[in-house]
Figure 1 (cartoon, rainbow, N blue to C red):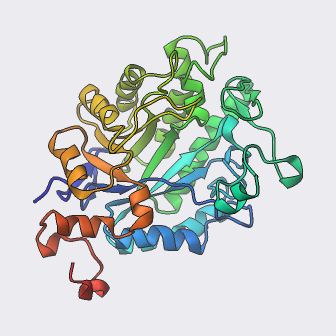
Figure 2: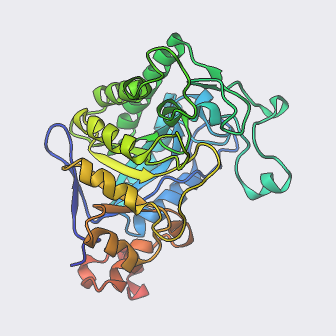
Figure 3: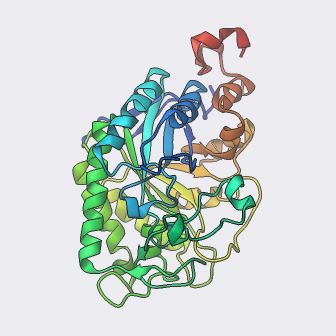
Amino acid sequence: MSKLFAPATLGTPDGTGLELRNRTFLAPMCQYSITKRDGVPHAWQMTHLGARAAGGFALVYTEATAVTAQGRISDQDTGIWNDDQAEAWAPIVDFIHSQGAAAGIQLAHAGGKASTYAWLPGHTAAGQRGNLRPRDGGWETIGPSATDVLGLASPTAMTQEQIDASISDWAAAARRADAAGFDVVQIHAAHGYLIHQFLSPLTNTRTDAYGGSFENRTRYAREVITAVREAWPAHKPLAIRLSGDDWVQGGWSIADTARFALEAFGMGVGAFDLSSAGIGAYHGPSGPGFQVSLAAAVKAAVPGAFVTAVGLITEPAQAEQVLVTGAADGVSIGRAALKNPNWPAIAAAELGEPHENIPFPAQYWRANW
């Protein structure tokens, strides 16, 4: 049996754990398809996520799903800030489960990177990039500090009241995710969005209890984790996605990430997904598996956590090597899964898995996996 297709367990505070059929995760990827602008998922999410569950992924994550309307990256993002949205997610979760996969939801708040045009070819071709114009439905953004580092309109620095309200939004979203039947909540703390904006000195210039020192800059993230963990059942895993490094001098570093991850693990976060960047111009590495070293650093710093690597992991042998070398416990597949929803089933066949261990739907037996 390959490492990639060995069963896995995501730890939980009550010790039961979530059993997964293999170690391939569908990475959260924005779809920008909510044309009614109401945050309610629909047939596209059912088709997109359901196909990857049928294709053999062990854990299927939703796109970044906003905990409040103000926290959407674009006005075409999904949400879970009200009960109508949670109810619409439930049948999607049920179908994911019916295909043998676990269902994860990535909870998100874009902060100063909210209220932008959907990053789709039709929009970019028309020159619609950056902040939504007010006449197109744009709204005021908030963040830890006013800044132009994000390359967008400066957000308004959050007041203590806004911070407190935001923490409540994260917790309420977690409760709705549980009601919808999700197995895992992943907190989005990467890619320059709100939590990452608090973490990074590049975007956090506050002088109060939420800025300055490492302890202060991580305070908002810790409060979000605490609130979500209390709202999320103890028998369900809590995950987080982190930008391991800003790749910018004076920014958030992998040493900061490893230190924070150890704290988060002690607070009940059992799974970590390591991406990078999102604040300022990109100055980091590139090429296949360019972020694997970040996952390896967190895995070394946090024994007992389940760590996934992500970033241009496209080939089965490459994914297997990440696990064989001990750099990570699993892999998150993004763009390769957009090209091929059956990536895990094909990977299992290529790696020589016995037929009974290839995760494909019975209805597709004639494909001769």
